[in-house]
Amino acid sequence: MTDGAATGVAAQTPEPLPEPAAVRPSSLLVTLGAGGAVAGVLLVIAFGLTLPRIEANRAHALHLAVNEVLKAPARYDTLYVVGGALTKTPPPGVDPKKLEQVYLGFGPDGRAVGFAVGAAEPGFQDTIRLIFGYDPRNRKLLGMKVLESKETPGLGDKIEKDRAFVSQFDGAQPPLAGVKGKRAKPTDVAMITGATISSRTVIRTINNALGRLGPLLEAYRTEN
Amino acid sequence: MAELSCHASMMTTSKDAPPREDLAKGLWRQNPVLVHLLGLCPTLAVTNSVANSVVMGVATFFVLVGSSFLVSTVRRWIPNEIRIASYILIIATFVTVAEFGLQALVPDIYKALGPFVALIVVNCIILGRQEAFAGRNPVGRSVLDAVGMGAGFMLALLIMGSVREVLGSGTFLSVSLFGPRYEPWVIFVLPPGGFFTLAFVLLAVAWHKQRQTARARARATDEAVLVERVA
Image (cartoon, rainbow over the protein chains, first blue to last red):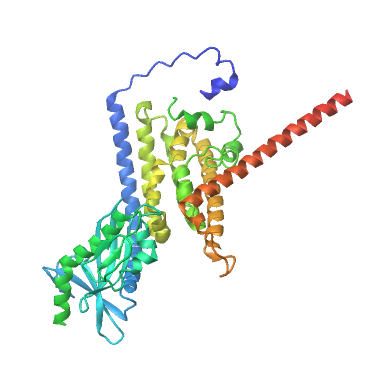
């Protein structure tokens, strides 16, 4: 196209259209199929190579998040949810990575300070994964941190970046209720203007997780 | 062949251009962002810090060079009817590899870039280069072209990121520049700041080009006058 224009001659005498080559539909299928197969193999290789690093990064981020929502405990134990109860040792023959986990933090005096619970629900764009600290003795939250979200930059991502929003969860009493404007009660959480769905998802995620796991957490505490 | 003609017509060079020109044109004269205004979504969205800009630039560079290399290598085997589908398949594969790589190497920045890493697939610089160049030129030239365009994109992102981070956070690569008494101009790290910065950068580029043209014209007239006098 450009070559003809560059010489300036072809501009007046339009080139005859090239004869459309006969393309067999099967060749299209074979080309795309082969391309897809090669792409698949490449992706599997890249996935395999990067997976250990990615998992290590995730574990490190989780460790930092647990420390953050439990307000820097002296140490914490990993507990597994098995058959409607919490246990320290996963049942034999089960991959512990596949079990739901909660983390029980201890203060410097060895007393339990609360649980860190991870949960995820669909937000505005994609799943929002978060972790929150919960003290079953006082039935209060200790803090909340969003681990993963793809919410709208500048609006929805305030659920992790807006300190005023995040700090409300510190000491809030579940079940939480999202309110517009100022919060009046300890159960209230003031939602972010322009990010109502994202804010609501965070609140709903915590309420649902506690609705499901709350009795387990309380039971475990009273036993120990 | 007129699909994506906006890219094709603007961004092709004649076949006998020297290799240096394939490489250099993307950096400045045909810079994909500063001149052709392509790829504005990441340019506006992730340039709120230098680190984000650099990582986004490197990821796009990787995808662009990899895709151009592959598209140019297999261009004779791809039937015309399915070339867009094939290009997108190749680009999407490289983007996914880049995504894994960023997750493994720089997880914090990967998180900060949010959905924009996956959106490299639809960056129109990349598909544009495949259509306009890699799909019809030999491998060497295509790679040079991709390196130039990728570097040009990185340069534009770096300019944007530097201005926005210095003004909006008072830092450069998270190193404080003006001390604690500097009040950051927060709007520059927010979305409107992206538009303002882009507007000023484009203004500066246009102004620079205008001056260059004016100078060249003045020189030409001077020479013409000189030639007349001598004659």
